[in-house]
Picture 1 (cartoon, rainbow, N blue to C red):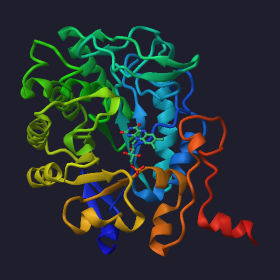
Picture 2 (picture 1 turned 120 degrees about the vertical axis):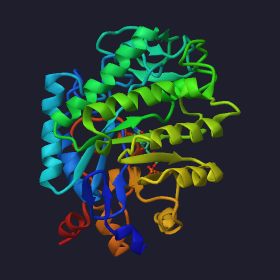
Picture 3 (picture 1 turned 90 degrees about the horizontal axis):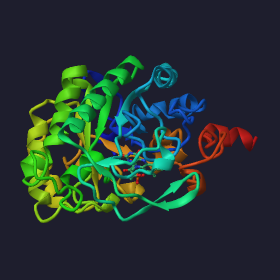
Picture 4 (picture 1 turned 60 degrees about the vertical axis):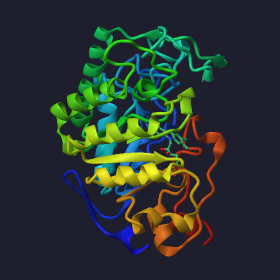
Length: 360
Ligand SMILES: Cc1cc2nc3c(=O)[nH]c(=O)nc-3n(C[C@H](O)[C@H](O)[C@H](O)COP(=O)(O)O)c2cc1C
């Protein structure tokens, strides 16, 4: 695991090791999208992860899908995030805020304006989601007009500026997991006949335009991008050309000299290797379901430069120390992943030192 503990530069940040806290929605923000009071403590407890990628954060009312997810587009939200970034910096960590526009993965019950969700095409994902009134069918979204697309790109741009104003070290553009940017990639979610649908070049256009706008606004060294090639999350099918689509996307993204590319990897090893061969900036590879002893394998094999870790970092604020000492991990409490009030399953996971002092 030696390479895991070597330093690396991401944009202008000097990071102490190769682990990263993966983005995780925790649904604990206030109703108006201001991060919850305990969030500064939650993130700063995990500052030894070096680089922390925040939970998915909406750039606008339209971008919200889940109950109590935070936003980064009002003054109050920016002030809320500033408390978090100050706390993380104070504890020696860095933070990128993940900009997540959910597109059609939304329900009017869950958004401040209660409007119909928006998407590349008026096609529902065929899924249900949790709302204040329980599980409900996700409705058919409204197709974005070309003018709406430009407004949405501007929302991303403003949100990136707001993230920097809030003290973040950068933003991660969420192009993965079935949300808006990913919906443009899908053949079953994007049936547009304009410049944003049809060919591979057209289906990635929105992603590239969002990236360009954000890079212009805050700089490439403060901008990361997340993809999840071939994953069916959110009912997305990228079709037979998925492989080519991602190679094209990564080639286009590589021209921006971004801080990093983040792959949530669920299987296509050939594609991952091809991405590695065309992406020379830092590559973050998050492999769901890997064994603990395999945590640094992608680094040893030259596939990845950094390893984002989700659930283990959520349940172990001192994950880095536990790995270094080969100490056991806390178990994650699945019932408090996405909800809850107070510290339970959020800020009350103990460090090794706290467990030890409880036993004295
Ligand atoms: C509670 C929870 C919330 C998540 N929320 C997000 C999110 O907001 N944005 C995102 O890109 N991925 C999200 N993910 C996916 C994680 O970033 C990560 O890819 C996944 O958990 C697999 O990595 P792991 O096995 O290390 O946890 C979430 C995962 C979990 C468990």
